[in-house]
Image 1: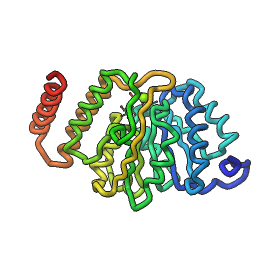
Image 2 (image 1 turned 30 degrees about the vertical axis):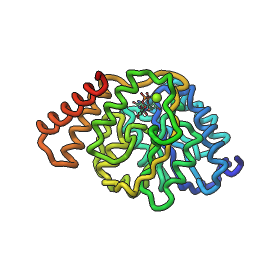
Image 3 (image 1 turned 60 degrees about the vertical axis):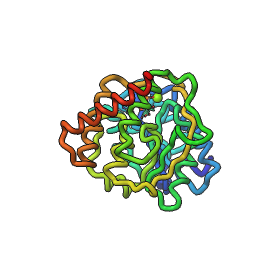
Length: 272
Ligand SMILES: Nc1nc2c(ncn2[C@@H]2O[C@H](COP(=O)(O)OP(=O)(O)O[C@H]3O[C@H](CO)[C@@H](O)[C@H](O)[C@@H]3O)[C@@H](O)[C@H]2O)c(=O)[nH]1
Ligand SMILES: [Mg+2]
């Protein structure tokens, strides 16, 4: 671990990978997350990574926790506290803007995304991939059987509505990575909701063969509560509307009809 510590006055170490963690009231999860992340990365000396937690002024001791972690990991773990903005996607955008690594990964703080899968995702950038995606629909992986049924239904519906927009199997997983160049190419991102990966896939025009999918098993939240609300779901529908217009140039009314159609088919399928 010594290689990841930094003494006072020492210059910032080179990093090639940045792990961005949007966090709101996640103090209880930060230490296990960061410790497990660096333990997993320790086996991959090619990955010189930093962890950036983007917190929206939680005032729950997260800052002090990160300060403690810095005594072990130095500047390779840091926290950005936003006081005037709120939201998962905009927090991720901020993290990507601050990242020193060329390959950038986004993951949740609550340990639903296993830190042990991070090296596989980062290494999947090899072979000229621009986008790496943690997928819950690959072979040999699962969603925790205790993940609530209503969340499974919402997730499946959201995924189906995004089908015409991308070939990626799980743009909803929230566990993904993108290169700096591709991120910069995407331009204006819809940073309102939770689904930034979908926006990036569409707006950066990521080709199918530039995506590497890495299966992972989706766990349960370790501590605290989910921040997914009805408002977040409405924002998702608005994001879809914008992306359909962006990609297909359709008028809003037609987009609304298509979305309703897909939703109706999906509901029928799950009832019958
Ligand atoms: N900074 C910041 N972070 C936030 C905010 N809202 C949520 N987060 C952080 O974003 C991560 C995901 O939020 P959860 O509250 O755990 O969301 P979820 O309902 O479990 O949804 C997750 O799972 C979905 C898969 O079903 C993912 O698609 C989704 O992106 C998210 O990762 C957590 O680390 C959480 O602290 C916010 O307003 N600001
Ligand atoms: Mg969660």
